[in-house]
Image 1: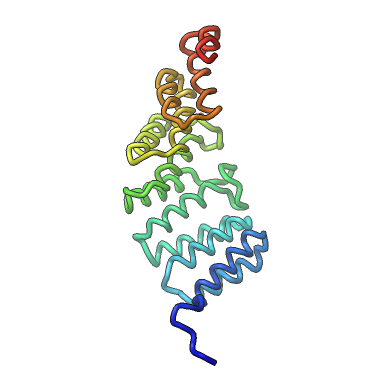
Image 2: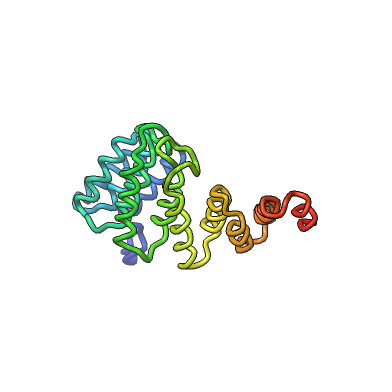
Length: 219
C-alpha cells in the first residue's frame, strides 16, 4: 500500500475530541466522558483536555467534579484565560448543573471571570459572562443585585470593543430595569432593526412620554 501523505489522516487527539463531542451532543454522557478522560490520560500536563472533560461533566450533571477538574487545569496552566473563564461558567451552576440555582457560587464565579479578563483583556467572552452573572443576586433573581452599575459599565466596555448585539440588547434591558429610560431608549436605537428593537423603543417612549404619545410615534 502506498504511504499516506503527512497530515492526510486526522491525529488520534483530534479523533478523540471529535468522537467525544459527538457523544456529548447526542447526550451519550458516559461515552463522552470516557473519550475525554482518555485525552486527559494521554496529555497529563495540558489544561485543554481537562477543560473539555469539565464541560462534559457539567452537562452530565456532575457539577462538583467539573469544578475539581478545572482547578486541576488551572494548577497546570495558571495563566490560561480559557481555564479561568470555564471555571467561572461552571461555578454559575449548582452541583447538578443548573445555572443560577441554589448552591451556585456567585463570588467564586465572579472572581474566576475577573481573572480571565485580567489575563486576556482583549477577549470578550469573560466580560459579557461577568455582566450576565452580576445581573443576578445570590438567589438567582434577575436584575435584583446591588451590582447593576457595574453591569452597565461592563456592557458599555464590551460595546467599545466593537458591535455586539447581545451586549446591546442586554444593556438596553439593564438600563430599563434600573429606571434609566432615556438611556435605555438610546441603547435600543443602536440595536439591529427587529421587533425587539421596535418594542423597546415604544416601551421606553411610553415610560418617558406616556402611552398615548408612544403609540402615535410607533405608527
